Length: 353
Image (cartoon, rainbow, N blue to C red; front, side, top):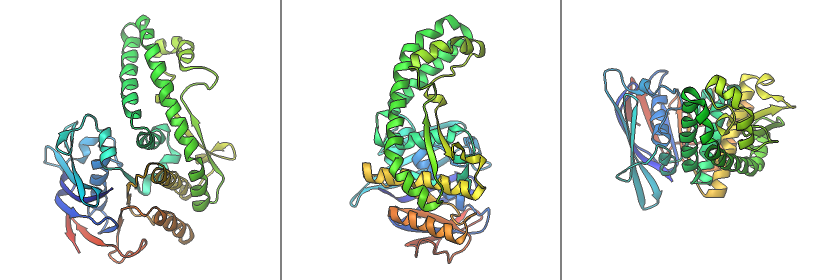
């Protein structure tokens, strides 16, 4: 599966762009601020329904425009393709897949699986659990497609429980049984994924960093108790703060080195290598277990990597044999070989080379 064509309208500095993409390597080059990363952002948006640069979707819409639109044609087989489209107006997002309205944005991930490695990838190690939960859940969805439905139902029940904690705390416990059942299912799915990922993770982190970094799953409540028991134990705290504290919405993947949080011991460059290892291990796992090979977007891949580690990175990416879209400041960039297609971006305008 790969992206064959994409049309972008009113996204950041890009008023209009249309690109035909090969299944192999595409190079997008241009100066700083030209719009290269915005093109990658459009591709990521098509497969995720969100940006990898900001959680404020309104910032994506070109100044002076009232909406943005991204439409792509995705190769599903050598002789078949599906059209995927997304439109953002204000804070509302609508998506269509194969001519029908998507039931949720999560369906985009199945229609066009895409992952990105960009200069801020180190945040996967450095910052809190939100990004690591998203990293984990995107993969779990591909392994267990019903996971999304369970997560949506859990989120709905969680909102109802939190609303009750604010208005009528005595009624909050009505939601405990549903929340517990769904939450335990989510935790089990995530745990299975991390167990299965382990050999891919060990291989990737050793190859890229040479560090004995470990991943530990924290499910969001004590391992010694069921979620039902944890909700009961935390009831007084929940009522006082009007918020549910125990559950998979508080889960995390602890990244540790010698028993300590890796972010406390690693340099920015080392954090990047570990985060890249998390991403590439995930992609190799999906490729080998589900026969899904996501498109990989690489934004300025050489940033903050010395020659040796860049060579290791290139080797690991090349093993994937996936569709690559790579940005560079230079037209002659050949980090991953000669591109099948190249585009020059300047002031938001995209020109095939």
